[in-house]
Amino acid sequence: MNDVVSVRLQDLRSAAIEMSRSADSLRLAAERIHAEVGGLAAQVDPSGSSAFAMLAHSGRLDTLIESVAGLASQLSRAADDLESAGRWHGPPLGILWDRLGGGARISVRPPEMPAAAPAYTLGSYISHANRPLYDQLLADQADLAERRAQIAEAEAARTAALDERAALLNRLVAYGTPEAAALNDPRVRGLEAAAETAAHDAEQAADQAGILEQRIEGTTQRLLAVTPPDSADPAVIRSLEGGQSESYVLANTRDCVNYVASRVPIPGELAANAHLWDERAAELSRFGIRTSDTPLAGSILVLETDHPYADDRYGHVALVEYVDSAGGVWITDNTHAQPVRFDTLTSETSGDRVKYLYLPWYTKA
Image (tube, rainbow, N blue to C red):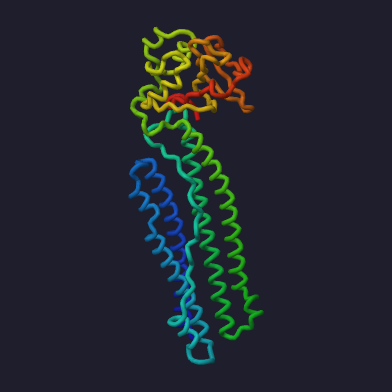
């Protein structure tokens, strides 16, 4: 093989390598685009994000990237075939002709990605108290998208290395190299090592992604618990956050109702007899108040009239200050200015006569 041909072959290999690197860069960029567009669509308009979703999951860009990667691989193999053909003493260019025009090429297939964890959407309202938790959720979702991009990149690199190894072995054996010698060829061994490294990288990224998915699911459920339902009025809820109960509410309520209203912005329509708060909350859907059996910091404890700790005519309400690591519920009310554990006041801490109201403008997820 003369020097001119050798130089041309080297140029061809360099071009193939550069094209392969470009395909890898495009693949990583596409993964980030999918994640960012999907997240942006969810935040901007969750109810009408079909156009964004189509863009985020469009396969056209992926198909183009894989075409570029496949062409780079073919260029590299063509250079190998041409170089080997220069040393071939059998039928003129027979194998090369078969490879270039006859047989089907092995292409690098895009890896199958795991289904995305359901994303929490901001929707129309989130309180300042829950903003740090929501910001952490966004950070975890971005981190998860990065891990998935790493998995995709590593799987693609592993597939490419294995395909290239198989093609190289075929060429070596076809050009007369004994199979045992071909398996020990430094280039073959190098491709094996590259595939193993890529598999290890994919496994590590998958482990990290699994941890993030679990954390995202937990955070999502916490936020959804205090997120106003669709029937709520975000403008009304925003008007309550950071404010205080109306003066007429404070002037015309007593005891436990007055205490809670003095601590938490309470709509006038809600400030009825204590045992009626859960019923009123269900009727006043525009405030987005959810009722639950689970205590949260900033929720309102509502006790029915027949509860041992409640007034037998008016019932009782209290403010949940916090829930400790052991599950103890610490409350304040008109007779306890400092937090006290609820189970020290009564043995009936759950059941049909005990409810918790989640005020979206105040309750902490």
